[in-house]
Image 1 (cartoon, rainbow, N blue to C red):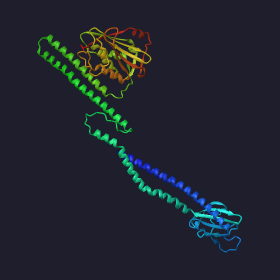
Image 2: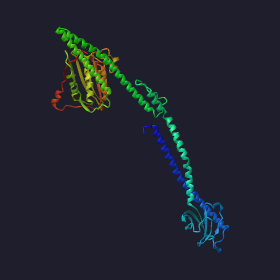
Image 3: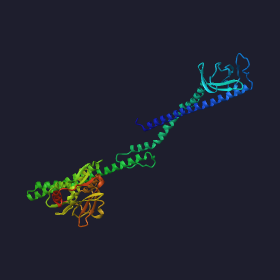
Image 4: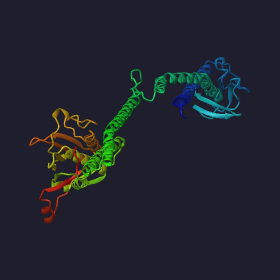
Length: 477
């Protein structure tokens, strides 16, 4: 059953019908109880009235000799009640016309029931000791049952009309109540694929408002994702045009020239263009992958120092040297993280530092621990970032005043997204001791970080000195 309206209609009609039937059953039980009480009181009052008639000499004294009992004339009770008067020695003195000749009850006093000739009687018995008689007044239980049945029929009869009428009212109410949903469905149905504007929640009922809020949130996410795709596509088309054109030009020079020096220069420029294009494509793929990542698993134990050294060793060779200084404590620093994303963040931080470094500069990696966070920082000796641009450099495709020739404006955006997916954050600031930028990875203790302390003397001696790693290979940024 896919229709919400039909489902609600069936549930409401079924629930209403059950409540109605339950009410009828409840009323029938209560009515039966009340009817029995009222009729029992009537039996008792009738018996006392007949006793009063006997004492008024409307019937013969039981001491008189009589072969047949007198027929009592009790017009008020003749149709529903029957009465017998018995002497205390067991003779039937008088009875009403409908009463049987057999005693209605063997009880000497109070209420009782008895089956006589297939008819069940409800009888009240009272004795008149002064006259030596016993008065029995009874009615047929069938009459009582008929009374209760008439009451129930009176309740059930309108049900045949009420339930269809109630069903119509419920259906009409559901149609009216679900009208905002239909209106919203028609509005969404009439939109084109590019319309991601939010739904106006003005006249929407409170119960449907969370759905509208969720849909608006989804529209916003989809629009943001589409905007990012458009930006990436436009940026890739623009940025790839220059190195590809340069590759073609340098290749033509290398083919056409007979001068070996010019040929070598052209081939070197081709390598630079290939490196730039490779880095750009890798960053575009990384940002696209981060956008598509949901529910990232963070169950790997990453050795930060080992990851940094691996990144340094994998860098391409170039014609001048840049040194990397790695704090030995990083070798004992571990993060519980997604290994791939953390390495992606570290690599982009390293590349960002190197691409803004002068020849012969030094990149320094440090770590410090406190109760709440573990902070891994990387410092370069480049020009830094103007203070007004610091909040903007993690935006996609932002290239500030000190941009490099091979930069794409994606490196720090990738770092921030990767760290956020791992529960960490990025903090950027200019160095105060000299020119350069300090980038800090702030890793909360709650996200999983710990430090392994070397225990042997040889390990302590090995980690006592700063590691100076030559960095082979970065083209000019």
